[in-house]
Length: 182
Image (tube, rainbow, N blue to C red; front, side):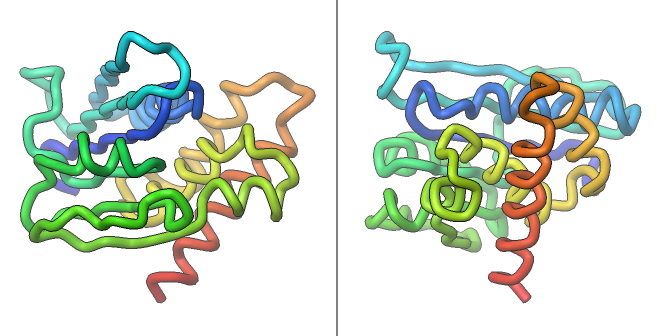
């Protein structure tokens, strides 16, 4: 891993992407002992407007808490792709929800497409865990934390009644994206 690794989760407000960012930061910092910061922003409309969560992970101290050149970005909606896929470094990565992002942003980065919301709805039976499916996919694509660290952080964050649901969602996102790239 590079000295500083920046990941952006983006989509619509209410999709749980800020939570996904928090879980990733906790996987890096609490589980693996790395330095990590998480920041977020969203439009004035709490639900439905574009929102983003950024996580910076480093082996050493983080001197600036905002993403500057993003290594990997997730875009769950077309609006998020249009607004937040900028700033991905050359050779970086963009994960798109293939059902909701039809116009791919242009840039010198690799694009991976996966039906994230549909996977949550059809394979898990609950759209509400799409953020955890996406988190599993991003960890599989970036290797920024170990698979087990991500799972441990997910399970530490969700209510006990939803442990199995979220564990299944995380692992499904991880496995499905690994199958896409291999």
